[in-house]
Length: 152
Image 1 (tube, rainbow, N blue to C red):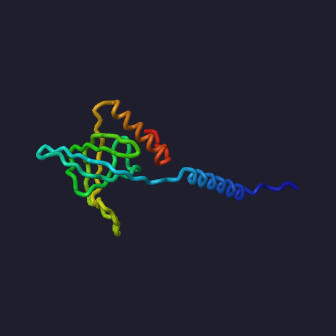
Image 2: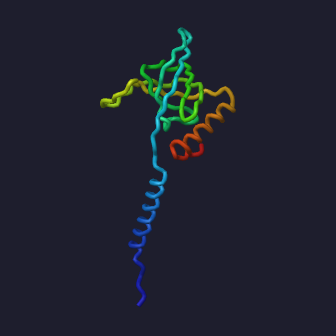
Image 3: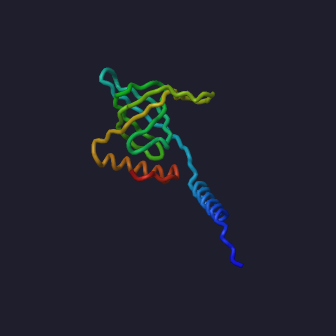
């Protein structure tokens, strides 16, 4: 005699297979966090340029802007010149859009305490500069972070 298919059982099996495929994809592209050093030079109208060491989490770098950590607050609205040291030395101009205290809530032993988180948007003089920095971000995503940036 002919049996009716058990639709619930087939749907459950299909859902389980999709979940296993998603898990395989997630394991194949592990998310990594890398940090590097940078140098931030602040150009101020009223005083001499100040240079501050910074720590950048490479995952926070995008073609439009980024965040980084520094030891003291930086003035919002000022222009900054940022030199990222690794994985490849690159220079970019930016405008500081936010500066806020940053605490990890625990004890972190570090030779250089970074207690402020700074957000910047990049300023490009030419389309070539913008294109070069975008290619740096794509390179960073593929080779260093092992992720792919979404188009857009």
